[in-house]
Length: 309
Image (cartoon, rainbow, N blue to C red; front, side, top):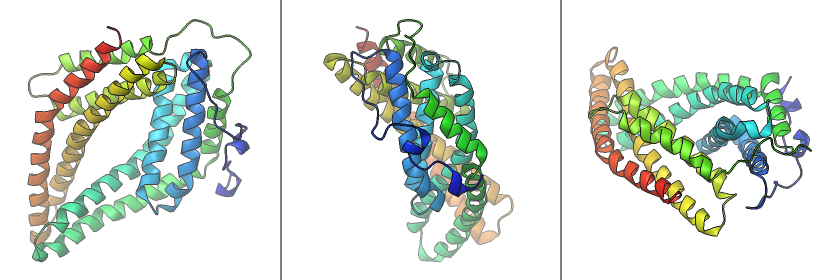
């Protein structure tokens, strides 16, 4: 299948021309389907920009839409039928390709900002350093383009669109999306309690993923909540965003420092000097995030508990 034959618009996928609208009185499964409808539209809207690579934000937003769909299907997929889990797994396949390019975009963009503050005599070595990662990104981008032009991707789009369509059957069981937020909150709280005093980097990265799942679940629940609870959920969403930002900065610093260590193993004097400076700076950024994440978590915990007070 060629890129030209892939579905390009919601209508070509069998979706209605306008996004599905739901309100607090609608059943939970309608909210899940409407959320999938919104996110598949967002994914399609950013696909062309992701292919062209003109603005890295398109790829970022395409990846966010995909992650939101995966999170919704993980937490509430049973409400839309047995097809939810296979679709979630396929979204994970696409997410790997998007994530590889996105990680390079974040690293390259950050390194360019850091190097811009260096003395003029270190600028050339800094540009040489960035060019290494630009080359790696180009390879990852070719793999992503092949994925987006594949029959597998086309099938995935159609399978997601099928999940957005309301069936004639009533949901198998009652489900309160707001009450359902207790589960991802408990998982996040349990992960926090299990951390040692000086957590490994991977554990803090896992914590960020738990926080992201809570945020996406809250975004879904907000559409089904009445005014008072919706306001409380809005506070939870903001708290989880701030939590993600702190731990995202931590993870970005960890990755950047590790990539600099890799460069140092083979670099010449000038390149090694610049890589060493960047590594030192990233370790400082890592330390700042480690000092801040606990306070951000406390705000998330407070906002989540307020929903059930």
